[in-house]
Length: 82
Image 1 (cartoon, helix red, strand yellow):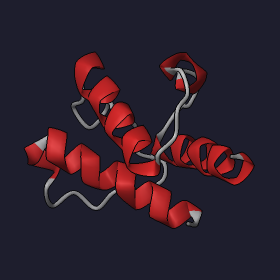
Image 2: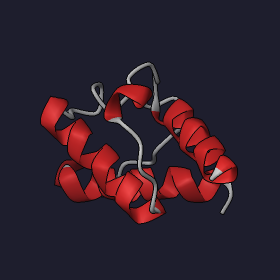
Image 3: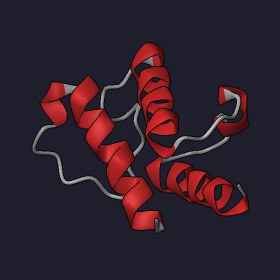
């Protein structure tokens, strides 16, 4: 799985949690908060993504990511090291 695959998983879960994003053209620099995701939405998106990737890690390990691209990079790196 490459970084684009991880990014697309995040985008798809974001669309699932926030239906208003159904047609949004996601960019690597998008921030979930700016797209209307509250803290519960963000936690749901991250947990769903971790489950889809079969990764286990604390949510606090992802807290410093600034945008969807950084989140995808971090999760992809974790996949590679697993």
